[in-house]
Length: 545
Picture 1 (tube, rainbow, N blue to C red):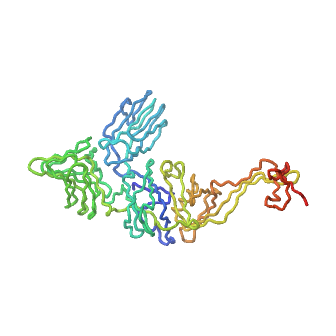
Picture 2: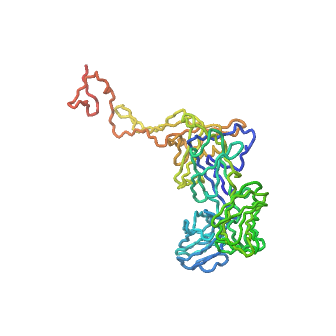
């Protein structure tokens, strides 16, 4: 899968919605209030065939590559080793893996032009991620720049993959049992390295109370070719235009390095996808083609015996119903006796219509309703200043949260006390630090929820119903299970993170609290400003009867 849920969070996408084992107790339902916000985070990984190849390599001041190594044996600054990489799909996110064989002096800076850059001063194997670089004629430029550098880059170790990003992510909400689509969701996304964070508010959806699941389309799985056609940019590799068969009376002429390919017509030309990602019978597909120019030709999108004309210039999208489990063919047909021609940009895109979406992964059941009773339901959410628990937090806006039915009870008080007794016999507490803790009890929870709870209480900030708490005893408690049941319960002691109830005695003054100011029947001696007169030891002066 391209999109994989990261463990230890409350929203986990699984490739099946079936119960994992029979007789495992009452099915768990995650509670979601109508006003909640839902966050999830996934890792995106390379699809098969997503590796980019170098169409052009430049050594500027580095010398020739020998035995796979690009080296500098003398102090080198400003030189660079550069690869222009050809994309077989319009990616926004890229993964780059490489090995610095040796680095004796100076530094090496790695960048994809238009995106971020990283500087290294130690040898090793590294994996980096680059988002939204500059794309020119379906290619990107990877550059290694040296500064006072002596060392060797293993040029043969460089691997660049395109990754599915938030642009390729389709998320929806489905009926918990039938898995029929209820609505599509447009989360707000952030991307950090290869981790994609999505978040949305339930108030943006018109859902009634009931049981639902979140659903996800996996880009790499590409069921029924619903997400893309392989090598839609029609780029030539070492063995021709990978993924396509060109034919017809006069086969199209594909010009390497050009943003367009030329179709010179005798009678007709065809380009047929042959990757095995067949389009499924009866599904409706949106096919997009960019027509740079066309003269004396008709252009069709064809699936089986069904075909739809593509007219006009510029970006054109047509809908076509698949006839049988057949691949897509782009047909360019001559109109009359004279030869025709066409130029199409290298970007043929295919996506299934929303009504025919095939979901590839689902969350556990979400019970949406009114769960804002803070005496019965507890919303637990948290964040970290930096990336922790293999999750991206810094600059990701990730705020995982869960609502649990539970109980807060049995207040206890932990005190740290220092006492002192004077020679006179008087006793005092010179220092007292008191913390109040409560027992929080949550029961009948599945393993993935326990995974989440075992980490969130140790976040930099853990909120329960809006208040900051921390585990006062440190360790996570043992999970209790009923016999033959895999749903667990925990009882954990938590204290407010920012509460402080403390006494620090800075002098040996002993206060006399009696009589009080409310004892108005006592004949106090008063000063002119109506204040009590006290002794040097703060003892009230009053008449004795």
